[in-house]
Length: 379
Image (cartoon, rainbow, N blue to C red; front, side, top):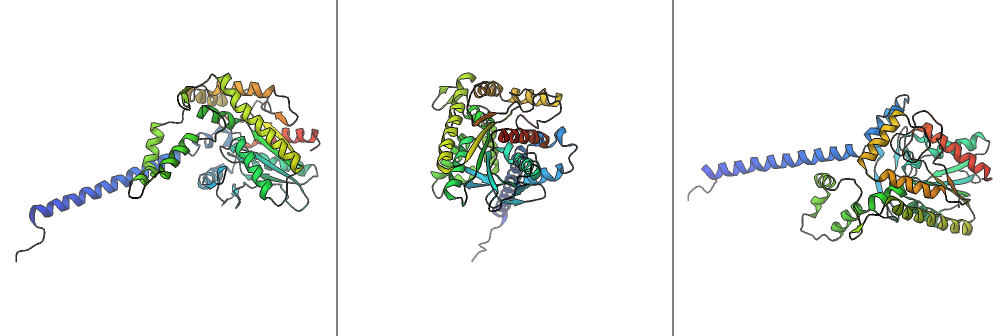
C-alpha cells in the first residue's frame, strides 16, 4: 500500500490555506476591535468632558471615567431603556435604574417628589451631588423641610416616556407621590427633528431597523453578523446622525414653524394625561420647560458661541426648529406649565457643555428657579 498522507504540493496548499485563514481571522478580529473602539469613542461625549467648565472640578476625571463604565442600558417594558445598576464615587445607579439623589430623605412620612426628564435631569456632566434633583432636595433641606426626591430622569427620554413611567409607578408603587415634576423640552424637539415627526422615542428608526431583521431571522443564517461592531459602524457611516429629509413614506419634511406644532401638541397632551392622573391619585404636578443654547436669553460666552455655531452647522435646521417650538411654548398659559428657558438670563459665565447639557453651576440655577416657583405655588 502506498503512503496516503498529504505530501508535496497538496501539503503546501493546505499550509498556505491555513496561513491565509489565520490572517483572515486576525484581520477580522482587528477590524472588530477597531470598530468597537470607534463606537465607544463616538458615544463618550468627548467635547463635553474636555470642556472649559471642568478645569476647576477635582472630581471631573473620576466622573468621566465612571460615566463611560456606567453607560450600560437594560431593556425596560414600555419605556424601552434605562441604565443598569452601578456604584462609583461620583455616579450611583440603584437596582431600579434610578440615579442617587443627595439630601433626599425617604422615610415613612416625608413629602415625596418624583422628577422625570432626560439626560439633563439624570445629570450628564454632574456628580450625584450636582444633579438638579439633588440640588432641589438641598434647597428644601436648607429651608428646614426635608423631602424625598426620586430622580426618574434618563438619557434621551422624551416626555411621553416619563409619562408612561409615572403611570407604571402609580400602578405598582407602594406610596403615591405628593408632587410630580417634569423637566423636558429639548428631547421632544430633537426627536421631532431627528425623525421628521413627533410621538416617537429617540433613535426610533435605528432601533426599529435593528429589531425587525432579528425578529424575522431564521436559524442557519448569518444574520448575527449584523450585530457585530464592524456592521454597526458601517451602518452608522452609511446612515449618519442627520435629520431625515422625508417623513414616513416619502412625505416632505415640513418647515420649522409647521413641524414645531407636532412636538408641542404631543407635549401638551402628556400634560393633560398627568393632570387626569393627578386628580385621580391626589398629587400636585408642575411641568418645567427647560433651557437650550439655541433659544436662551443668556449672553453666550466665546466658548458657548462656538458650541452653538458648530452644532447649527453640523445639524441644519435644528436651531430653527428649537426657536419655533420655544416661541409656541412661551405663549402657552397654563398654571402647571412653567417656562424656565430664560433661567440664565444675564448670566455672564460659562454654563453650557454642549447645546443642552449644563454644568453643576447651571443645575444649581435651575434648581433654585424650580424651588422659588414651587414655593410660590405653595408646594
